[in-house]
Image 1 (spheres, helix red, strand yellow):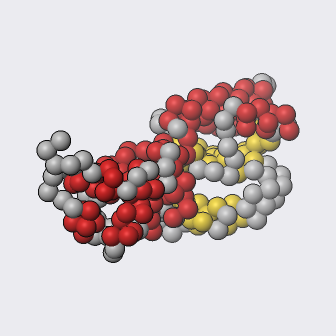
Image 2 (spheres, rainbow, N blue to C red; image 1 turned 180 degrees about the horizontal axis):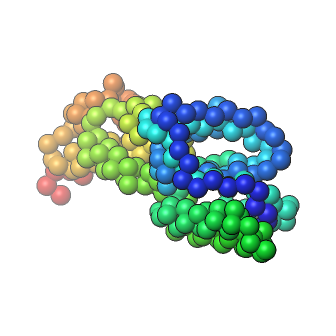
Amino acid sequence: MQLRCIGYNRGANAQFVLRRKPRGVEYVMLVLRSRAFFVLDGETVHAAAGSVMIYEKTATQHFGADGEPFLHDWVTFDLAAEEREELLSAGLRFNKVLFVQDVSVLSHLIFRMQHEKYAGGAAAGEICNLYLHILFLKLIEEITATGGAAGAHSAELSRLRAEIYANPKVRRSTRKLAETLHMSVSYFQHLYKLQFGISPIADMIRSRIEYAKDLLNSGGYTVKMAADELNYPSDIQFIRQFKSVCGQTPKNYQKPFGK
């Protein structure tokens, strides 16, 4: 593990965009102090302040400011093959947006590394590499504690899911839900399932069926009335979805009123 170059508290304007083809020379770590976007496999991923990206040597780098001045710390470094495998085994991921709860811990370590590197002491190289090792240990510790990629949006996803279950009659598309969190559809689906263990589409269906079960057991709703209340285009679609979730038809599920 060897430090190459470093930059602490660097900034650019709100129009900043960088596109760089793979150079195969070094790894690059970005520690964000502001919002940013990354283009990963053709998809635009929006990252909050406190996110971290580590590009591998062979990765195309395409990122920039996301509606505000771009502030970040950065480190370029090299890893031996066995060191890379150790980091992967510890839970670190490359070419993927990661989130840490307290980015100041990482920034402070980068500040110390920069100071040692340019102070020119006799042991500067060795000290910097030790700091780099500590930086990775703290990063792994932080992403394990916060849930890595999902952590940055955990609260937002929870609020969104609460809204879905509070208003199951409202018809929503995955695209619209992703837009409310400023995410691509694929990234939103990935984070949603990562956090809740179910896809957003399946969860929206489940929210409607849970509400339908309450209606059917209230004593005042027929199957058709429940389907209409939840804005299903047909009774057949409602019955099909109900059975797929509950394992029985709504008619068989419904308890006779008064029992």
